[in-house]
Length: 137
Image 1 (cartoon, rainbow, N blue to C red):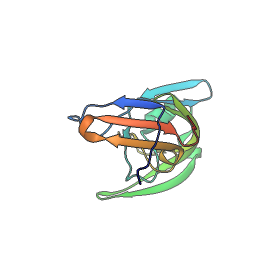
Image 2 (image 1 turned 90 degrees about the horizontal axis):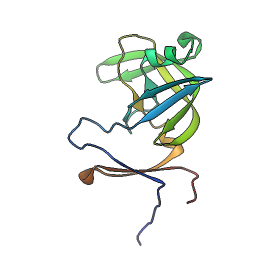
Image 3 (image 1 turned 180 degrees about the vertical axis):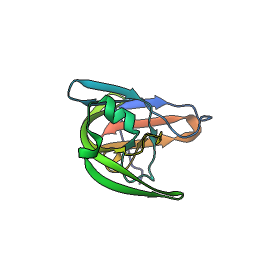
């Protein structure tokens, strides 16, 4: 039996570029940052570079500390509740900002973003389909 899903957004991405980057807006209070994080279904959480958090006016170390492990080591980041908008779909969620100023990756992970979405992907065509999880249209 075939399943049918509907999505509110279709986003075309460059299949020749490394990873899948999307347009995102980070907001805290009246501060707004634009960035192009990569979708990372293997990342447990959303993690952004420290400078983005500072530009939002956040005191990075006042957030919830969390150590993350990777294949090449570990790093410390701090969790903060912000408003995150990806392709026009806006949520309030906890994301992490790296403690180290040299950390330069921005990723949308499973908890904090993907767990709020319905995601479809046809990599051959470079098409990403996206809707808020509770979107009924």
